[in-house]
Each structure stands twice: as structure tokens, then as C-alpha cells.
Picture 1: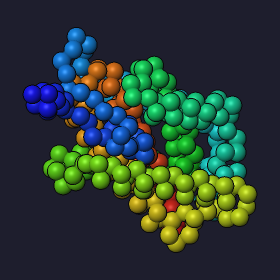
Picture 2: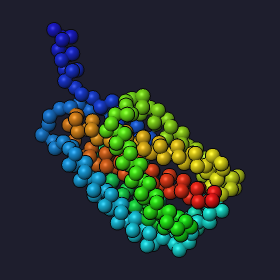
Picture 3: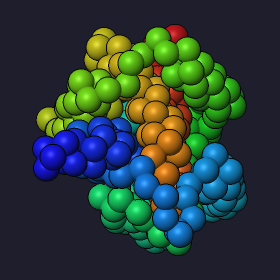
Picture 4: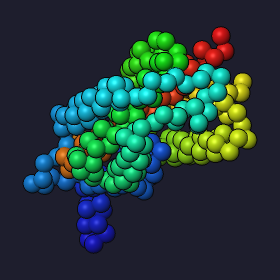
Length: 275
């Protein structure tokens, strides 16, 4: 009887085998939740869409502000180094960099981040997006519009791929994605250090013949991150998660889209340099 009761209780629990919120943070044991009915408001598609609308709305507003406030200086296409990229950056931009990093890490590690945390990240990251976009636009005319359109295309393709079931999002997938994204982040940090100390010129490894291929792989990783975020949203709704989890999902989507946009921007710049 005791065994039968245990099995009954176990079967009443529907657990989330993974969570995303930025695929690089994914881990099969990061978050588990019961599908239980409580008095607490639960997340729905409407609550997720509301969080996404507010997050991206603020990001766009601050991206516009960052575009206006960015220094009137273009990246030297022949020397896309750390020094040329940050030359003339204002104190406000440096503050945005620090805030986006700190708030992003906090939101990534929290299961139920508060709306103010996610919106604060949106504002800081939006300022960075606007400034960096303006800098690239001054170096490569028309690159921002092309990058935006390409980002929309990748996001749409990711949505179609997920809905069609072409990619099975499970623990194996999440583990592979986590390792791949972590490896890319480590590579990027090492590359940044080598460029900063002068061991490599230009954009470092991205200036080599393998640069476009690496950027293309990074875009694919971003698309897979987005697929994992969509899966988490569906599971969050199915398992009746607290409505605050909507903000975690919004953070994950926003992080993945920004990743894709920046990587496309860099890939287009690399192609322009090779003409």
C-alpha cells in the first residue's frame, strides 16, 4: 500500500527536465517544478507576451538613445581592435556595460527574476545595442538594417523549426547546447584578451579565414538558444509556473535575440572587409 501511494504521488508531479533563460545557463538539474493548482497566478501566453512587449519596448527606446548618444566615430575596418572599438566611449556607456553585465548575470542565475531586474537589463542592453549599431553603421553603410532584417529571419526560422518539431528539445539537447555555448564564450574571452595584449591584431581570430565560419556557428548557436527558450515557455505554461516565471522567459528570449543580432552584425562586417 505504501509503495502504491508513493507511485501515485510521484505520478501527480510533472517536472520540467530543463530550463533556459539564456541557453548558456541551461542545466538539466537547474530547475524543477510541480504542475500543481495554487492560489498564485500562473504564467500564460498572455503574461509572457506582456513581459516580452515591455522588455523589447524598453530595449528599443534605449537603443534609440544609445544611437543618438554614441560617439561620432566609426570602427576602422582594418583595425577592429578593442582600442578602436572603445575609443571615445562615454561614462554613460561604460555604466551601461557594467549594468548589463551585472543585471544579466543576476537574472540568469535567478529562477524568478523580478520585473524591475529584467527591465533594467533591457535598458542597459538597449543602450549598448544602439551605440554599437551606430558605430558599425558609420563604418559600413546599411549594415544595421541588413542585420535587423537577418535577425528577424533567423528568429522566424527558429520559431518554425521549433513548432515543426524538427529539433527535439530534451536534456541531451540542452547539455550539448550548454557545452557549445560555454565553449564559444570561453573562446571569445580568450580572443579578447589576446587582442587586448597585442598578441593578435584586428579582431583576432575573427580576422582570420576562419572568422566568418566561427560567426556563422555562433548565429546557429543563438538560434538553438532561442529554440530552447520557446520550449521552456511551453513547459512553464503546461506545468503551471508562477506568473513571475514569465519574466525569466522574456529575459531568455531577449538574450538570445541580442546574441543573434550582434553575431550577424559581426558576420556582415567581416564579409564587407573581404570585398
